[in-house]
Length: 577
Image 1: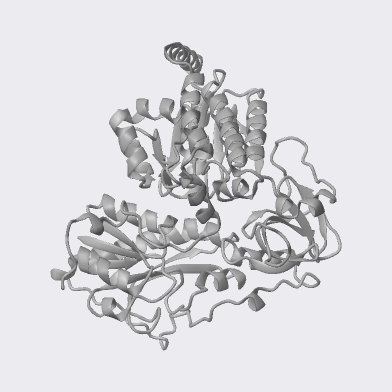
Image 2: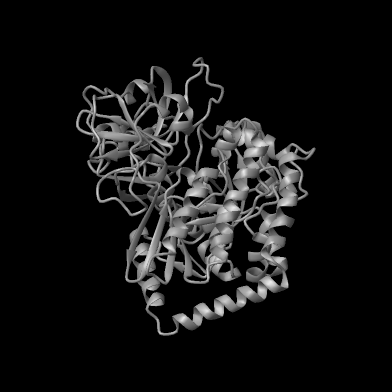
């Protein structure tokens, strides 16, 4: 079928649904919800059999839903209505939540039900739940609804009307959650309550609060079980985070956005210790002793675990962004891990993201964004080079969350890449102002997918599923979709490799191949050639990268749909008169 997506942006959920439907043979085209007239034109051009709205912030116009079946993906249980569905569920600590696929009608979120999928609501940030449980449930629900619609000619499907008299309908109409609904009372709220409130606002819009006497929005909170202090007071710092006391413990605040009128020149989300640099510097440092995973609740962005001759290096960087200092610390941790009595190192990344490459927000906030871009790309290149050059261990990238841009090639620097079924890769750079990219991709990619395959990946700018990655050679294995099962499978497979009888022979062959590759063309030459292009991106006359980064960081509203997404605009058709 021809399926048109009307969506606010090409976010992780939209990408996942695009991949799932495309892999099943449907032709999917995308139009960003910019204006009613733009959406109407897209419908007229594409003539879709079905319209799906994975992520909208306003209603589909009547001129469209009256003439076409439009399926809305709503992140709430049946009967739940309103723009803050997931926020209310997290803040009220519901034990179970769901996703409903419903048909667009005049009343918002009140159309008949095509599918509902439920899931346990773990204690987590809204952004994490959205990328994982919500996305998985939405994929199941949309696939069921699309299949039912497709069978309609022979097996007519009648969606279920919303009926609040049905005792099984637990949802209800909810208003937009306001900051007054989210407000933290530091003199009364426990750590669990504070976490629930910040988690419910994580990603967007954050919690409006005051820190160091300045208005700001709080994001990215983690529990702390040992440190204590006067409720509401900042009591410690660690790397990028600030610890703030609650009535029964403390929370780590990873990111904040300073309020307008505070004199701070960067009105976007930044690591807490950068947004409040002088104030944070005056706090005592709660330094961790080494890289080992802590045995109590705390915030630790890099941690190491070990089992059955395998070292597991976790790096939980918010949104997968890796600034210069984070790359340097991760390289330090990696080199330390190589000194341990192991033969396999598994690079675990984080639950939500493995890596998305350089840290654009930190670059935007730098005195010289060009200089910080240069420092950041060199720091991540140093890490990639260390992984490529490791001769003492087998290296595995266990990609449990999404990854993009340089993060994809940092993962490919490992000997093996195992990816969770359901996670997505975006192995390209061009969307960020035609960046050329580095991380040794010109060395790593062509041998895996061929010259034509490498060119297609870098030019097409589309997401890649784990199954598709295995099919084209970019990925070595697609493992379990359930994240806990994925981790168990990774540990089992890694232990088998570490204890295999042919391990020494495999390591010797790896060293021989690396030496042969180096003799044919040194890694330094690949890096120099890539960085020559990057230098022009950062310092050249074309400002495309700096403009694209500014709009990305500032969350500028979409003004058009990129042509590689809006396929209907390249069909050569015209809008009927």
